[in-house]
Image (cartoon, rainbow, N blue to C red):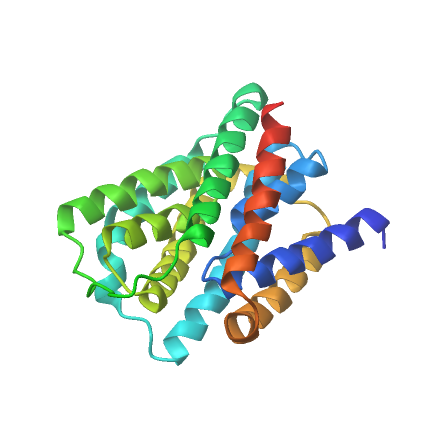
Length: 247
């Protein structure tokens, strides 16, 4: 097995573990790693979506098994998120556009991760409110289109919005974003069917790696690892890789 394949498998496993431990599937992290290795845009997008789909599926199963998943929490975001992600998946940006766009997405993800790491619990917690239907629809649509176009799952953007608007608790937010990632990744993969030929030959190895990471993160990460430190590590990785894609 090539050294590069082994290093990528190890990196993907680590990213899947870290992201799944905070309720995410890792697409932006996979893109960050592939950017460092100089993957072509089409290969980056389709690979990130495939890996994201698997980890999101594992996370969704984990929340469903533990009774933390309710369709009523997800459907306002998914109603338009799925079709707009499908549309975004059909769009293949040229090399000169894809790298700057994804670079901005990665840096935005890094800033959101850093912001959540800096957030401290309030001594008086407000009871979460049910998200208004129309704002939730619009949020799901916008994030769905951006995530489908760039190959990210969208959960890394949806979670900060839900937290900022106080629409759900931390556990409910993790469950919502897991299912949102699952549905949007599936939609974007369907929309990007023309790019399926760009999947790397080593893809099965990487799928096994992220599956292991997803299981580890979902079952152990949230119990034994500091959420704040995980977010700082991810923020730094995303910031570095996003900057590399821009410059």
